[in-house]
Amino acid sequence: MRALIVSDTHGQIRSVTDWMEAQAETFDEIWHLGDYDRDAEGFKALCHLPVYSVKGNCDLGSSGREHIILERMGKRIVLTHGHLERVKGGLTTLYVFARSQEADLICFGHTHQPVIFHEDGIYLFNPGSPTLPRLGMPRTVGIAEINEKGIHLSHFNL
Image (cartoon, rainbow, N blue to C red; front, side):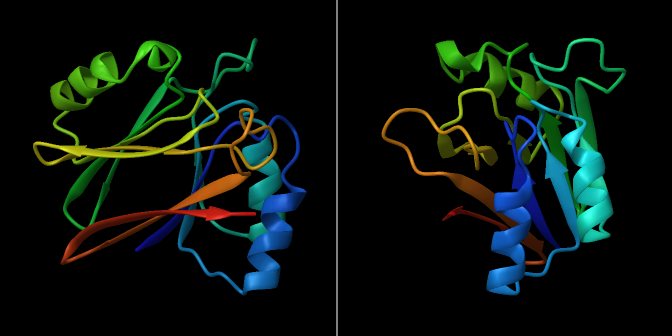
């Protein structure tokens, strides 16, 4: 199972879909981690893949969900934007939340900074932002490959 992970697109998905087309990248699904959760509809229309999306702090008035829990290849995955877990102040609250959900992987956004962190069997993963990276950071997306051997996470610069 291979998932494209994006966050903090802020209404600009074309750079991601252009990259997918140019690289001939193939995915089974897309996980959108908020800001703007309505971009998930654009991904569905352009990519014709299942899209799972949570709302972020910029998704005011959205009826979207704050968290989604997925089961893939025997692994438990939590999708969140991260603002409720205060990830700009560190990853401790996010890690505690992941542990409480018995997650193998928790994917979050909000900081616009790519992160891969692993401790005690739990991965914390932020794909960064493909459109509005923080100063000095590249525009990035994430990829999760989950199979019988485990979880493999990576970032790709756009």
